[in-house]
Image (cartoon, rainbow, N blue to C red; front, side):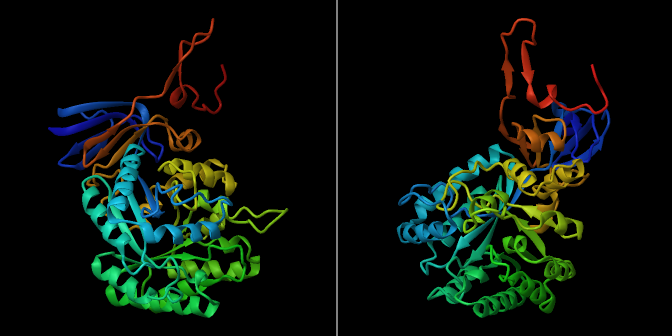
Length: 433
């Protein structure tokens, strides 16, 4: 006897028509034609059933603040930072919590159940840390929220940056962040990487640094981050986010850098939406794309993930908590249009990000947590093409969100009465007529 059986499901690895049985919040069986009773049965009808989406890089303290106290007129990174500096003194714990909870509602509807959020620690009031710690507790039944102590104005550059970040960790934030390229000098940036990695090693914590979010080919803090990862024994616990300067570096230097990153087992988190929007702003033409070297990093065996970064905040006026929108942009910006490319991009917003976040029990194997998403698409390639409706979202085997299928009714003489974009337009290779 099972609690729930999902029948006729297609899996991300290409297997089709399987049943997924759930008991006590865990996956108990993944087989074809499970002959057993269950408290509930759901027919997936040949649609994709996936583990939930993961966002390994987000700023929940700023989300949904678009227009406060004013709009980012230029749409640039620097104006966004300046605007956040204007908003930060006005922040209240209550407003931060309310906005974050609203975003989490949206995330659940999109099948996004795992989020790593950077929390600005540059204001010594640490109202952002207080608010996000409260949110983490409130959403724990349905979203796993990880928090990064992030010195937005610089670990050394901000007047009380060092002390404030340490206090944020003492409050319960569990990941050490940094932004070395925003320190006053390259040397200060290098020193901040060393100090923050030492701090993480002493406390047994993970590290996730904004690193080289710049068009400057001489912004090379990822090299220092990789070296300090090895030095402090942090392999497998460190992520470098953005790394956009790599798109401007010469190939010879990168040929040495990537093997060092691989040796350090650094996770790479690119953010295609914000990277394509904010980078290359000093270029006329030719204009750089602004995304790190995704294909080359993947080919070298690094764990490459995609994050959303921002949704309707001072830096990015768009966004919808949809990690398939992120993947879709990544395919275009990175020119990752091949079949295997698209599969790897889907992994960048699911299993790769889960690995970078250190998630336990994530996946579709027997024994994994029954956290699942049923999509209105037949496979992962169609999912990244269509950004389809999330028909069902399950947390611990229980439905937490349900959305009707998007089916269009037609009144065209001699044509079908309705179309389901998720199934009726699935490519069928080698079949005609």
